[in-house]
Amino acid sequence: MSWSKVRRGLLVAVAGLVVLSGCSGGDVGDPAADDATKTTTAAKEKTGGGADSSIKVDKLNPNDVLAKQTVSMRENPQDTVEFGLQSLTVEGSIATLRLVVTPRFKSESADETISLNDIYSPSVLGIYLLDRKNLKRYDIVRSGPTLFASDSVSTKTVNGTPMAAYAVFAAPQDEIPTIDVFMADYWPEFKNVPVKR
Image (cartoon, rainbow, N blue to C red; front, top):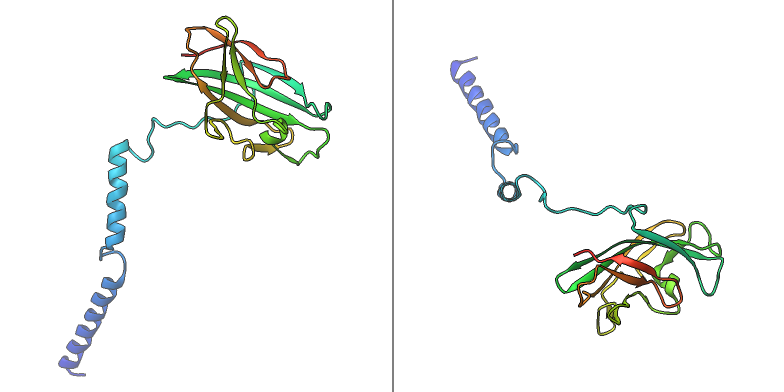
C-alpha cells in the first residue's frame, strides 16, 4: 500500500471523528439549554439557591387546635361533624378563621366523599363572629354571591378524615382580646376565642 493511500485513509478517519464529535451534545451548545441554564442560575442567585426559603406551606395537623366540638347534623343526628378551631388572626382590615373539619357520617360508607356543602346543606356556610360586649356581629366577607371562605363544594374529604377550612371576616372594630365564634346558628358557639393581632 502506498504512503498516499495511507495518508488519505488517515485524513478520512480524522474527518469522520471531527464530524461525530460535532454531532454529540457535549461540545456544541444548545441555545435553548443555554437559556434554561441562565434562567436557573439567575433564579438561584435571586433566592439564594433553588426555592425561596421565606415561603412556607402549612401542614394540616388536626390536633393543633385551640378548642374542638362535635355537633350532630340536624337532618340525621347520627351523623356528626367535629370542628377544630385553629386560629383567628387579624391582618390589617381582615380577620381569618382557620378550622379543621372532620365529618363522621354513619349514614354514609367509610370511603364516601363529604364536602362542606354536605355539612351545611340546605343552608349556606353560616359561620360568624359575635362581639357580645360591643353588640357587633361579623359575617363572612362577600363580593356579590361569592364568599371569602373555603369553597363549600370543592372543599371535601373522605368520611372520617380531617380537612382544612377557612373564613374571612372584617377585623373586629374594637380592641377586644376575645370573641365568640359560631359555626352556625343551630350549633353551640366557641366562646372567648383569642383574637391574634
